[in-house]
Amino acid sequence: MNLLAATDLLAADQSVWSNILDPLTLLTKTSLANWVLPTILVIVFIETGLLFPILPGDSLLFTGGMLAAQTPPSVSIWVLLPAVVVVAFVGDQTGYWIGRAIGPKIFHKEDTRFFKKRYITETHEFFEKHGPKTIILARFVPIVRTFMPVLAGVSEMSYRKFVAFDIVGAVLWGGGVTIIGYFLGNVSFVREHIEAIFLLIVFVSILPGIMAVAKKVLNRGKTPAEQAPEAALTSNESSR
Image (tube, rainbow, N blue to C red; front, side, top):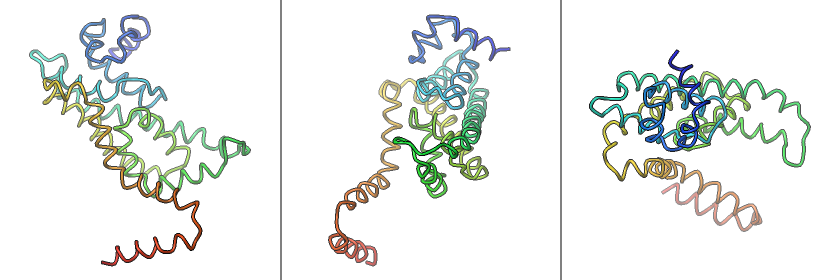
């Protein structure tokens, strides 16, 4: 009943939509102030499971944790934490199976100027090789976290592997960001730059991969003779 009420308010209240990207105002100064928990859960599910990326994911969870630390709390941290983790997980599962459902249609689609079947094959190979890390890190990147499970489903990534690492991602993102908001919500710098902080952490994590891709792109225009000295240098460095 609470979830349905929050959904109805999201659809009907103009002040809600005008503040949808400002979680603090949304959860304290609109008609949803009395529905903090169901509002957070509805938005998390929509963002992660229904292919609607333009929603305040990180900042919403951070704000939820901050409100849970108030006296009296707008929502209990002991209820919010497990609920967010479960809904984040269910949302990704929904996205994955949407991808599995549309995958066969894509595989049977003829190649066009902008789409080639090998793109799906390459995506599948990518997820099989780098999937675990990607599933976890994608949680902290807006927009990417919305479409990552769909791409995993389209590429038919091993479901067992997807579930295992998606649980880790849901706990680290859903639980982790909420806990940070609970303990650091009153630190203005953290509150105002929470999404930038997460993006920086993710960027540092994937920097080695970016450098490897950049090196591969730069080497495409070189002849084998030009690439040989670099390969030998890399081999010598790795053997030291």
